[in-house]
Amino acid sequence: MFYPFFDPSMFIVIPGLILAMYAQSKVKTTFERYSKVASSSGITGAKAARAILDSMGAGHVNVEMIEGNLTDHYDPRKKVLRLSKPVHSGNSLASLGVAAHEAGHAIQHSVGYLPLNIRHSLVPVANFGSTLAFPLFLIGLFISPPLVTAGLYLFSAVVLFQLVTLPVEFNASSRALVALERGGYISRQEVKGTKAVLDAAALTYVAAALVGILNLVRLLMIAGVFGRDD
Image (cartoon, rainbow, N blue to C red; front, side, top):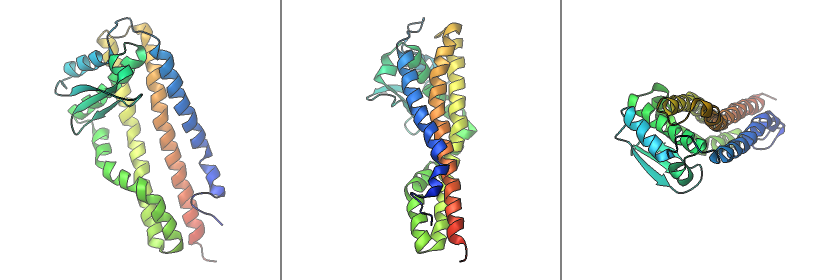
């Protein structure tokens, strides 16, 4: 007998969970390592982000400091780039990499980057699906088969959101490296360290997508088992 939260099919998800744990550890240790390496330019993350935004036609985007660690993000609704204090005020390779990456998202928004637009359109259904997919699936197994299908569709939307996120993140990192080197904020020798920070962060999104895909496979297996006639 299979159950949706703990059953033999859980083993399918284990590779993804291992990668996710590794990715979280990797991003933390890599950020800490390159937070101690000051850039040759000496510019802070906030100033680099401001300069990149202005040079790429996104001068309307404000740059603000927020509390927390690795809480950096771009708010497309308010057109605000929010940087954590270590990134905002730091002049390390890690600070510049993260700040430029978030500026990359703002530039994507400004130029109408298609994967970002698709991602934004999926946000409501992905949020809805991440909350209700598993409960609907579980209830449907024992009460109403159509709810199983509804749960699968909702979780599929979550996985689609995770997959669309990948090119968005990779592209923002690519834009960041080009802008930092072209603007003279990092030297050619510093590109490797900055890229290491961005690659570590990207790995967390890859891991999340893998976990999502494996969970979807698992749910499909469970639905198939329960859907068989005895």
